[in-house]
Each structure stands twice: as structure tokens, then as C-alpha cells.
Image (cartoon, rainbow, N blue to C red):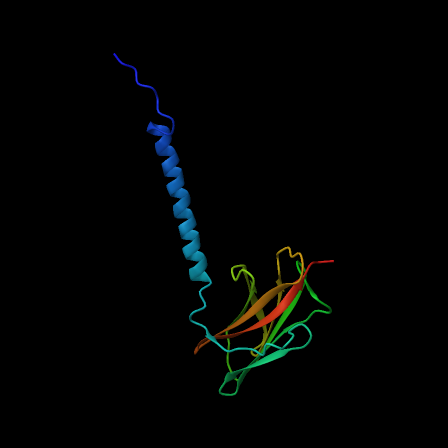
Length: 168
């Protein structure tokens, strides 16, 4: 009887276990990717551009939403916006009823780091809450606050750019 040498590599039950593990990991990553993009899909939002020159932490910035409606956003901090520091977020609206206001903080370099904060209604037209850029930065990093109003007529929103600096 001739004895054949064992081949290098996976064979039999051990190879099957590795393939099952790899397949499970691929399915888990695909599910996460689908959920992430479905949850953060803002294609249903009607966007209104903000003024590029507005500095949201120096003073409130307003955006006309058409038909006499307006959104005003402000990050109420003294000095530069630092990573890991609490950010008091304020949104005032006029001429449009909103049952919820969300603020998404997005890293503009990657456009993938999204942190969503739901603001509390103080009055029917004023919303406040706390946000935080929970990421280490080495230098000044550009971020974007996407303010989304959930209204009976559909979601409307605008965006406001700002910089985050390393916490001193």
C-alpha cells in the first residue's frame, strides 16, 4: 500500500470550520453595513444650504427653509470647540411645526463618523440638547452639524460647518 504525503493547507473538518467562521464574519459585516447606511440614509430629507461664512459657535446661524420658514442653529461654547467636550446645541424654528429635532455630527474628512443627538423640546419652536465630538483629533479637524427637523410634511434640514481642535 502506498502512503500519500499530507498536503499543506486546510483539509477535512478543520477547513470546514474555518470556512464557516469566515462566512459568518462576512455576513455579520454585510448586515452591519446595510444597517448603518439604512439608519443614516438622509435621502428623504429636503436640504437647504446654509451660509458658508457663518460661525455657529460664535453666533447663531439662520437658514431660510422657504415659505417664510426659518431654522436657527447655535453651538453655545466660549472659545474653540474641543474634542470630547460637551457641546450645548440649540435650534430655534419659525413657521414650521417639528415633533423632533436631530443633530448629526459628521467628520467631513471621512463623511462616515456620525454621531446623532436628539434635542429636547423646550417650547414648540425651541430645542436644546448636549452633543459631543467623541474622537481624538491631532489638529483642527473640519466637522459638519446636520440639523434635521422631523415635521408632518416631511423631514427638512440644513448643515453647518465648524472646526474641532485637540483638547488642551
